Length: 41
Image (cartoon, rainbow, N blue to C red; front, top):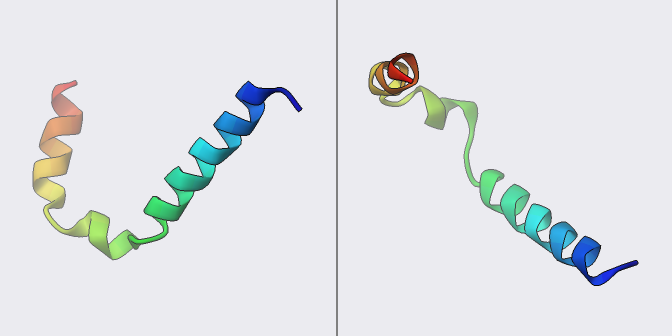
């Protein structure tokens, strides 16, 4: 495996480890503000 592939795997592992700290309920808090931001883009 090339070095880049290993780095990408480590990065994805870190991303998913961080995302696992949150639930769908966490996303629902302040959903009106989130909707406003998403609609403006």
